Image (cartoon, rainbow, N blue to C red):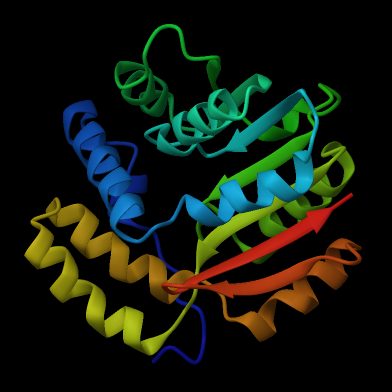
Length: 228
């Protein structure tokens, strides 16, 4: 059943979901990211893209709970870098959820709206995590073009790998961990909605992106990187 991407809406994308439940789901998704070492590939990209720069700016598209941006802020502080971190998310409830878990002195600005409205703001890096599989093919192609045009140093897509072991093993992991029922349901669906390595090159070609690297990262992450 995983030969083709699943085309379906996840429960967490329901606009009628109440804020309290939505916040609980985002918080548990952040726990999933911790357990699955999801932030490490993005931090590795930053080391390659930013290098010895003393300062850089970054846009995170679809920030959710804000856990990726907080991790980047800690990484930048550890390495003595001055940063401008901006997150954009279509769901206005994400802003409240992320802000509630972010110390006031953290250099992160959470915004609500369409990432396309931020064109021309001059970001060094553009990243996303667990966002690509929520997009239609046409939306993803447009997003790739945006990143390629806007990211001066490089961009990074951190997403899932549509793999049988992950698909059938996730329900057990999520049940043992006691994550929210929506996270248990949507997590498996997200795996089915994600891409396989061989499906990315045609997407990149359609977007006109050259020299991007598609890489499988343990456990069951599929990342796409472009250094400018």
